[in-house]
Length: 316
Ligand SMILES: NCCC[C@H](NC(=O)CCC(=O)O)C(=O)O
Ligand SMILES: NC(=O)OP(=O)(O)O
Image (cartoon, rainbow, N blue to C red; front, top):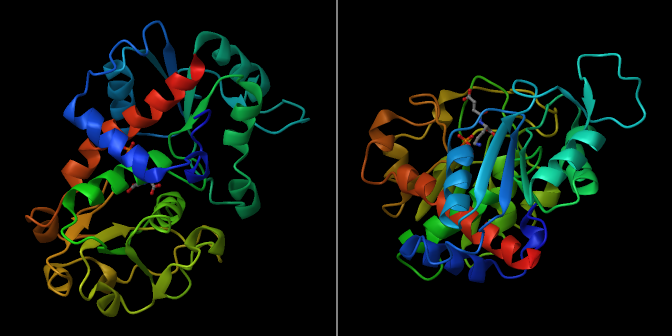
């Protein structure tokens, strides 16, 4: 594997899921693979899980790690080409990416959607620019449109907890007062569409995700109907794709409650975290046996470790 930007960089998801599960069993089996290799983690946005789990994964593989909060620890980065740099950003990504590529063998980048300009966000400028100028493999730590390390951890978690060969997995929109990106939901769709699951997406009208990511997934606008017989409920808020970046409703009837979970087949509750309690999901559900959010977050280490191992093998 050269870069890990999206599901399209993976030739065999099942093999990668199994790889992750093997790392979970034997975290230090490849502790020499990353010796004398350095990963740089760049954050344009906040993070808890991604920052710590990716560092932990790299360390388990014997790598050195460096993390940088762009714009806070370092200079603000200009991403547009050909502009007069008379604003707040002191350094262009052309130099910054190339320089960091001299210090690091792998660069991992988090840069959320701005949610102002759909065309710009969906062009994935930051990932594209880093890929173009860094000269080293790039790992996506959640970009404008995708969060593949999360999706791989989600696949690993579903593999561990499924009780039938072909579980029913429901991605449900849940209310939030802020405008959040579509990245986690988009990415989850892309990965689920390639897994052996019955995949259903449910959300209020106006929250349709980009068809490029939803693909052939079944979309049901009635949340109760969608929940019927589900083995996994994956909750996430996202802002509108059509009315780009808008919050169209905060309808509390979409919050995940115990009553809704009772419609499922004793389904497991999943969320990528962080989650707003009693906004998206009740305490009762989050604190119940059905919630596997902590185990899911724990699997972020094994997801990152599987990906970094594949990239390290390609470095030679
Ligand atoms: N990486 C996991 C989710 C990150 C981000 N959530 C957030 O920004 C939540 C912020 C808040 O609840 O204030 C998102 O939805 O893409
Ligand atoms: N799920 C996730 O990516 O969490 P952080 O935003 O805390 O990294």
